[in-house]
Image (cartoon, rainbow, N blue to C red):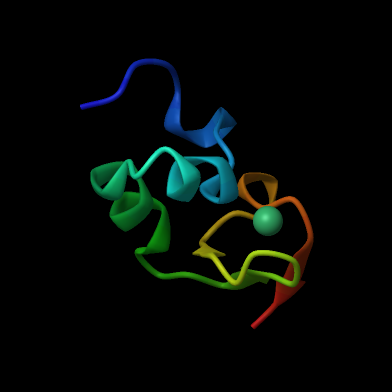
Length: 53
Ligand SMILES: [Zn+2]
């Protein structure tokens, strides 16, 4: 697993780093999508341009 708190990380950045485990964890019960990167997360904090799904 990756270091640091997952809630502080951007899914957009994780995708760039190919951190699939972390991305998958964030995508559980996703409620937001990033308008810029197309990533999804349950917390808008994890996206750079979050939009409610
Ligand atoms: Zn983004």
